[in-house]
Image (cartoon, rainbow, N blue to C red; front, side, top):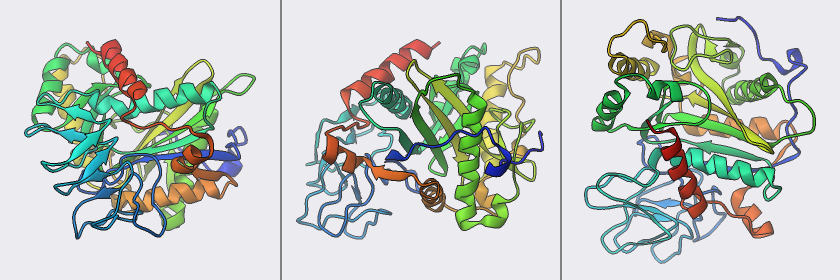
Length: 382
């Protein structure tokens, strides 16, 4: 491990954030069900829960004002029998909907992504396709710089090199049988798990004139994550170090760890006029169990050929922040991210407010996003 701190004062080259950013959130709850499906967050003080999940009379969605029995939830996923889910994902009788709450028999989903028996709808690539589409729009000046916070109930995102291993198809099929969706992602890195206890944090920014050094962006996101942890757990934040953790999954120079156990990795993706830097942050649950999942994938995918190049995962090198003295839930960590960005003088504008002010609206279920997911799947499939 490279024993280097990530304090802002020690990283003079760290890039500054813009004065205003738009916030998009697609976060699953602790049970892996969709707590949010859309861009805004809480509706204030009333009967309308925008982008909310209504999970029944006793249901409660964090940071969301639930619509009452007679209320209307715009762009909401309704769990009741007569719920209407606009821009929702519905599953058929035996289908599985990612980021979805089942609408009842009488439910109607307008502009919905229908997930059939095979679970095909761009699936796990939708969050990546959303960022790809958002990045193009930001590069074209159609949207301001953005922060995207998201999670996925159960999946494994592979790197391109992972997909080329001789028995990768067999290993992916094994994960699918266990309930883990699989896909090959277009940003850098190797295989990583995705679940409700892992928060994905992406800064989507326009390119500025002059040469870009991706290390500056890695330092920026690393220090933001440290500041987010410090909001609730300053002692743990002070122990965070950046540097490659040998034996971790998706190892890299900007792994973030406490006591030599990795909880975060960072990757980047660039377009012609914009780019995004993305981190997966293991917040809750068992880091070792996730490491065992990825080690099992490589054992199968490699066919036991030790001459091949792939990460040799040691599960004990992975931990969740909750196991390292940090935040115990995704909600606490996400709140810390928002506060860390605000603490840098950035106005963080909800996507719903941007829509009201400018008309710009981007949803997971938008046709452009679904088409981008289809293209990514075809481009990076074996």
